[in-house]
Length: 218
Length: 183
Image (cartoon, rainbow over all chains, first blue to last red; front, side, top):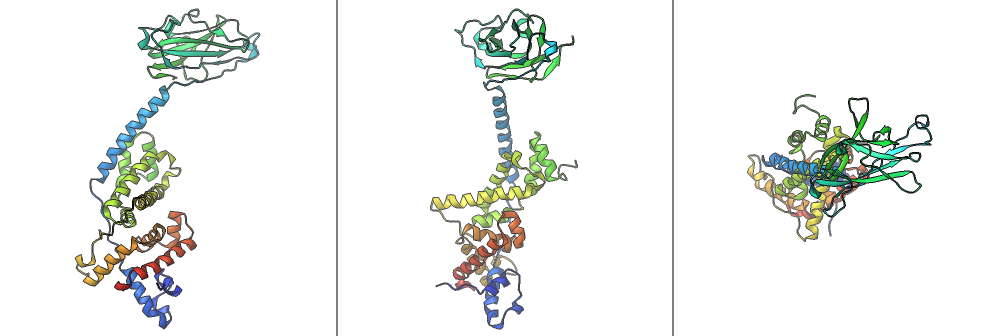
């Protein structure tokens, strides 16, 4: 059967009372309790001098792994849908235009039909990239870029029913490409959600990076 | 920003998050020993404490983006270390391995001012602490080893002062029972 300390003795241990403030009959118990707490080892603990190096070695490994994961995330296959609105006054007959590119990222199989004259050196260097444009008022849409020498007729998009969505899938060689949509053979539309660069002629082009793991807009 | 060693925790955390991974060494140097005694006493041995500190520092790096208040990195790191210590205790309990009852501290007998009786009492207290619940042990270590006041312990652990006192008072009773031959 254990016998606990008197509440006043516990207050003594908590530092709220001094031994002299205890009733005389509790002072012996108080002195015993102080011996108990006085046995605490407060010696500073010194860790191994190699701890820093060990921690930093692991940290560097994790940081490198994180970088790899981030790169994998950036280049992993996934759909990206972007929208663009153009003022109706600028586009006769169009209620609204949203442009986008969905990058359907998959390594081009060797047996796949050549979707466009862009697969540079066979299947191993190419990745399928799906372009999507929402342009309900358009009569013709194409995508032109560095991968097809900016030929506005080389890669036409196909209208998907009456939805106003135009799509095409191209096998693009690994590397960076600039591109833009060409609507009705005359209007160049850059991808609004992807950072664009000036082409030096007053036009803005979007950029896509293609790797063997996939592609992403730049 | 000052020199690397003078930079505030907040500055270092932001630099590391910005990609300067090597700057994390500043935080490692700054905090490696600060909580070492807490970890060693919580886990009953210097080796286990060192492992816990190392693991906590690595985990803190891995989760640095979650540190919402970089200027309070020290308190945030303490919580990670605390969780690590609790997890280690649970793991040992599951595996049926109690905490080490070795005396890793400098026994009083090894000190010029120590007596054999004091040394034995110190060892007995170290052994007795391993029989407390983790919560009781923690509050005892923080108050009587680290010298913190109840409100400071509450700030670190998130517990109320009233519940901390309750744990501590139960710990006093338990220790009295365990230490009766040495008092």
